[in-house]
Image (cartoon, rainbow, N blue to C red; front, side, top):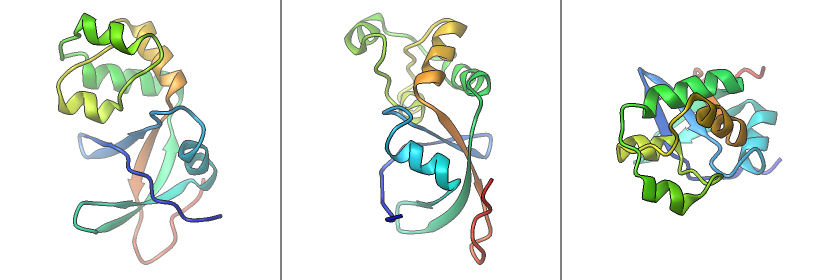
Length: 130
């Protein structure tokens, strides 16, 4: 395949990196799922090869809830975004807001926008697939 660069918002939670497929399971998320590996390019150009594992929906929902539950939930923002649109979890965390309220909301969101855990791999060997 053709190597592509896609800007994403990483979520660093207790030293573990996550990336959420903001536009759903198509596009780069489908490619990441198939490849199982990627290279994260940090500001300044440092490159980190990673192995990507898509989390089961229940696990992803629990992480989203854990990260965002402490923050306020502006009703106006939820109305503006509607039932299907959500900014990436990393961005919501940065601005200390949440959209969803119930466990079911988080489960629905995790089903629409997959969450991948990114695990660093040694840079001198190809990332493991699987």
